[in-house]
Length: 276
Picture (cartoon, one colour):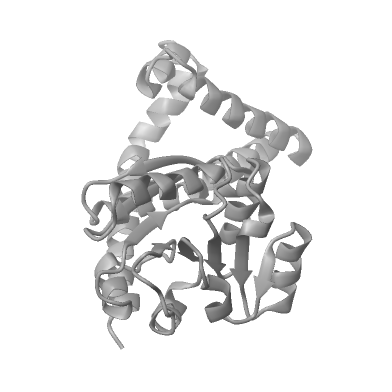
């Protein structure tokens, strides 16, 4: 990301996602002196300071003159944090607080405030995440492009045309890493039960997961369904496993789990977002 002498970025909250963001920006060549972070926890501030990021205990001092203000707090804290922010119309608020809607943020912030709501995921910790974005009507196209540029520091981005889709994104990519980790966990356990060591099973499963993911995203590669079919010879070992999955309705279970996660995301939006 190119440095902009007038682009100061302020992060409210210095947790894992915030540190992933400013850590990724620094790796891309962004001047850490243009990055600010506020957090009441001294330990979190110290971790950020090691990277050269300016740290503050008070949010008001952190956001002064910042072009973008990134809210990285727990959803239940978002109301009080936003109500206490003294933002100017020229500042863009970027929220990664799960479950907090644009409508909620507009209620808690000054009228006409540019706001962008985001849903990143945990692979952002190694700059391999994907972040969905949705902006309110007060956000300009230039501000959207600049916000997207910031978030590419932690992986890929995807704009959605309806805010309701953020709940679906939450269920698929926000919660998605846990689904894959759960599958990996169970495959390792199966290997152990069949007679190989945990170390052997872990190495086999992790490399298989990595290789399969890289194969699926390789340029010009077949879609996942075709890739699966190529491995599944009729009457073979893979066919036996796939048929077992189908018999026990694993496909329906997975889709139901994702749907329930999406519904829960919508419920959390209502729960955390009720005006004070």
